Length: 171
Image (cartoon, rainbow, N blue to C red; front, side):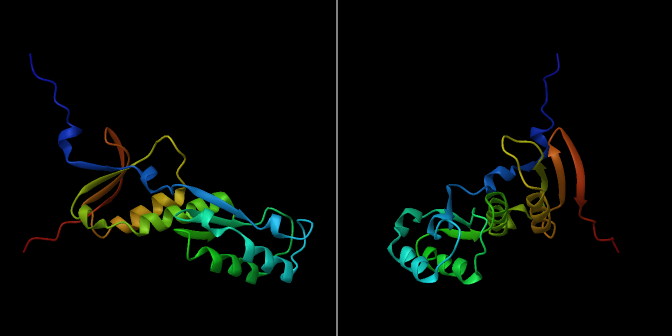
């Protein structure tokens, strides 16, 4: 009887699960409680509240800065919050939570040292436990294309080819 051979395991494919790039420990900083009647930004009161706020709770965390109130917030208010977060937070971005999660994930992909994928056959995992934004698939492809031998989407047993490096013609 012939031994069962796992051709996928022997294929030399490297699988990348984009879930590894999801930001960990994300905290929301909402401007709403810092507004007068949770509706109006009064500069003097706003500055005073930020000055007395305990910023240490954001230490080492990714922070999403948003305003859930239907209020007109001047740009400088977000800038002021960022100036307080910068010394303590690992990272801070502005936007709604979903958009900010995407932005943080794209930053994590951008920081990847892709040299280990040089001349490798790569599969970008298509299904997982957590939803992955489409932008992440585009970003990882853009990042790896200059180095990879090939890039595929899906699972090692069933892939969709995305990119294959063309061999230089022999002379």
